[in-house]
View 1: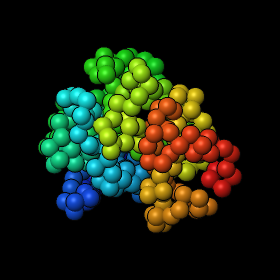
View 2: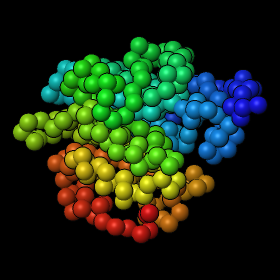
View 3: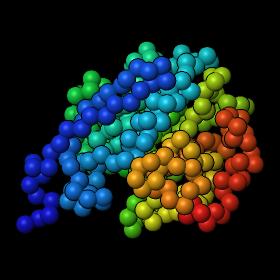
Length: 289
């Protein structure tokens, strides 16, 4: 008997609720399957269950909603959000619900590399009254999938989300393909090199929930971003230990964190992240390997 059979007995529905800075609750409900261990070895596809990284990102985008989803003063275009490796869609659907509650014109695109997962993703979008027509398959790296997304969204995305995407023996290659995809789809800087975000907003960025599994180190993650013109740093409010308790980012015991990547020329403009901080983020740091 296959280890992946009898999935019906593993079906589960999960509810995720977060709170905006104003105190308004935002709740979504997802259908998926229950993982019986920390690596979901009982499931054929890791995208068929929820992972802590997506909960981490949901809390973070709710906490940062006033900065991430601020109204733009230089454009009437909707804010465009892309989730890579969506799985059940927890982070992307949450972003869509937050944007809807704020009355913010938006386009939220949810993607996964597996067709079976995309089907479940579409079902979860319908369950939460999020348009499922923007769910699509996307294999990372150069190829037809990426070209099709670039054609459909030629101006790129204001915000890209990724949750617990790097793991296993192919993690290093997956990381390179991931960064190729982000570089191609993250909205570029204006031709003058000036920021295109409205005052008070976080510049266009890629938020990656990263779980320390041994596939790659944090230094390798940051270096991969730099090779593609992206400066990354760990967010203290998104860093947790193995017991899912929030910790200081310099702790020896962190297991999950959110890394925010900006275009390198944005790094000295926002949130007290100056050029020296970017250089510091790239230094070898034995305590965070």
